[in-house]
Length: 192
Image 1 (cartoon, rainbow, N blue to C red):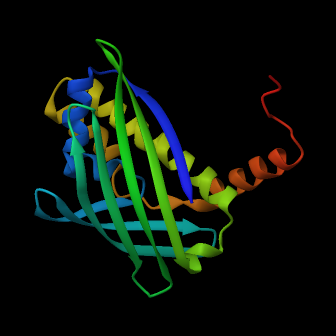
Image 2: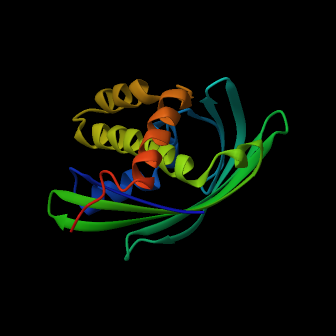
């Protein structure tokens, strides 16, 4: 499954690039994620928690930085997640690209190619897309907060707000199902 998300950040392309390359600073911005170990400059281990209604999933995740093109402002991370109780997993290639809007603003485009397996795969594509979109919005808010921080302490406080909180999928799932329902009947579509 291919997921595409974009958001703008209030920072120069260089400043956004420096944050994007600092994986230990951005992992905690993903809802439910907690960095567990830095293996080396291109490999990390993280825990990820997701709660979808009565189902709580916890993942061991290996993150690898595979491709870096600073001139193009592009980096690819690969994540391999295994549900801790053997109920499935996910693999994802996440390509992030930076585009300068102006000297003080940058667009971040994220393209994720994801494969789900086991119990995790039982959720429909539409729900996964909507939930992931909401997760990216929360991730973007955390990144923006870090870039707006004027001191390292403010940046840490921004991350602490978002850090290691499991994703509450019930409310996200209900919202996602509602949006899927509306899409089926063409409600809310752009009429242009």
